[in-house]
Length: 385
Ligand SMILES: [Zn+2]
Ligand SMILES: [Zn+2]
Image (cartoon, rainbow, N blue to C red; front, side, top):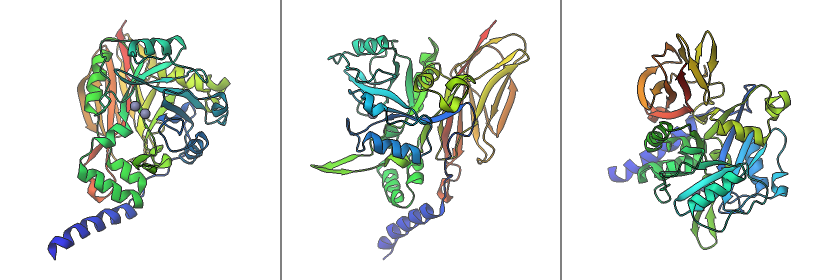
């Protein structure tokens, strides 16, 4: 009897929690110079389950203010790109498969035809030649990792990849999430989040040489192949577009003085310069999160270089409605501070690359003290004057 009862109680507990936990609804960008969007989405043009129109409908429902569509080895057409409203631009992208792994090229011309080769160096160079922002995709994916670390001919890397993250969970966590999914799809995906330690370590190593933009990516397919002719739309586009979202910080003159109307090209430029941070917004919307180095002479945010002259302070502030976060501060890849606090305002000891990782507990009664990566920023580069 007890043997039969235990799994029943576990399933009932999971479903009960799913019905009780309400994650915040996400609103359209609320901060004037911040645009919130999702990078790395597949459509029917490759192995996704939805059309461009269906993806755009999901992006509207998820309240995004931009989306980067990246099908495998096929560029978007001019007519696909014409489906975007002015306040939700599509970044024209492609995910290029090479013999060293996958990379994204964002900001490519419509119907761009990539060279017919699998050589990663040739493909990276071809994407550079058309001015694309090139991002190594899921570099530590269990099946398709990036393997050519000798090249430096790329601009960014995915630190968080939703698709790779959920594949790293064990069988029981996946089963828990699948059960939860029917009751609370957003919570199910949040439960599968894990900190990408390998990606952070590699990023810090690359940053020792040069600036490399770090981003989070959804890698949404909304499709699992179940067999011949049968697909399951998991995870769906709408829940998937609510998890890992890139917050792009724009200059006040973007969009002709209205950053809400920033073009796809302006968004790509800001991303390439590292003017962005990632938020796992399903946990709590990270809009307005701030990470800056400031002194009497000025202030710098993610992706900026700050020339140190005299005393400077590191200032972090988190949105006030979230539960108490755990903030970690890194200088040149080494953790220098860790606090459970809503804000940090402390003097810095000297030049270096400063970045932060911020964690929130998992929601619900089974999430107590399970710190989950919520926000990470691109570094501020502090140099000696
Ligand atoms: Zn890929
Ligand atoms: Zn992909």
